[in-house]
Length: 585
Ligand code: GCB
Image (cartoon, rainbow, N blue to C red):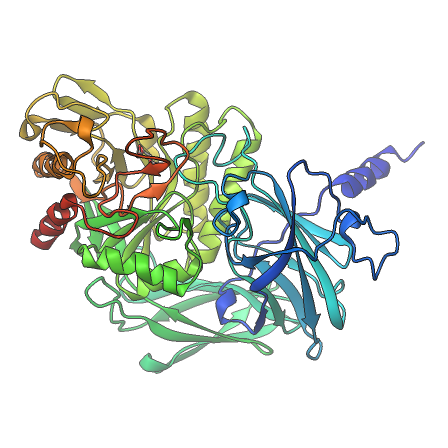
């Protein structure tokens, strides 16, 4: 007998690319070296390079001399498009290099953590590939305890942002395809056995009981973990089971988090060898009939969508200062809710939004045109969903996970998204699940929500551009919305384009005037006030944003002009219509 099976297994093992591990929770609260700053780069449009060709010639006398890292640098975190004029439209590979000076502390473990790189990243340490990651908006990490050495290390990352038929998002999408290492990079050191992950939130439907868990990784997990909330004088011990998991159950008289009072508690978690601190809020979020209910009371979501983009810079938002600009605009508009469009945004933004009292909708970039008939799509979407939920599950500000945006109903799509809804609830049963629709059944002035996927969702969401892509079938107050499902509806997108400073008649959209956009907002509000199951609105969009989708050379010039603000932050007339509407709700 030959040993065919072991050979096949060995072959599969050797031929498998190495993938990133699921990242540790709360990386910001860890002891770490921040690897942000200038990285050396080489652009490689035709993907000719390999890690070997880039090896430092001082280390390798055969290094390929045509590829040298000494000429060019880019800032990390940052997209390459906004940093070098010649990379504005670039879609291809860029090699990044950083010399990482490492000093091992005790018997610690070491991890390389990337907050995000768009779209595909391949990571090499000291000439050896340590893994790869697909997906532009979620974190990934690699344990490097055995590959990293004392002193200088050569860290090389190839980032490729070419659009793909089987990508998420796929070939065309209405935002700029910013490439690069767009989020923070950390070298984290942990104890040998360490607190890897935890889930500390109120139990579904409860306002006074935390049900959660803490997970340890490492060789010596047996024992106890302690969870303490000093302000509540809570200090509780829980036993770790054989899988390294301790189940948490804490009752308390919590001041609940809300937009009016975004209370966060300091929470400390201790294991025998590790400690981690976080700021965590407690609130309850439910659906009752057609209402969204926060802490036991119906709430109307006064929302705004934004991209992770600083329009004046025409680049990705990357840090606290950028988050502050975007979120201050949202607060000024009178929002209690933001839609993080169309992908998980960076952790600076999520944490700051929560601290400022903004409820959040967070989504994965399953945006139109996704190849739902390709089996690989479910795996990729699953990965993105779990990386998003894993990262942000302790942020009480997040109330809705969204699975997709404007996907066309079909058996394949329904199958994938129904499975995704189940996966999402399995990862986190405490929040609401949604998906934004743009397919409705319209007859005359009646618009009916009849998408079968609704059955798998808690909250329905409609993107409907009345007065822009769709004409008014009747007077706005006579448009009749119906739904086959007894669930709340968010108008998750609506709006129209206007060039800031451009003026014209209220009824002529051909001149892209602010007055037309203003009237469109007034009309939509009249329509909203007649929808009995409406639980929130979210105009599209806070500010004009960069996108190759928009080719009207007179008015758009590569900008989607649906902003309530111009790219410079100037308020268009429609801004004040929404601000007024929100001040009365
Ligand atoms: C949509 C999309 C959004 C676009 C917007 C538009 O329905 O969800 O990503 O930017 O419409 O401006 O057309």
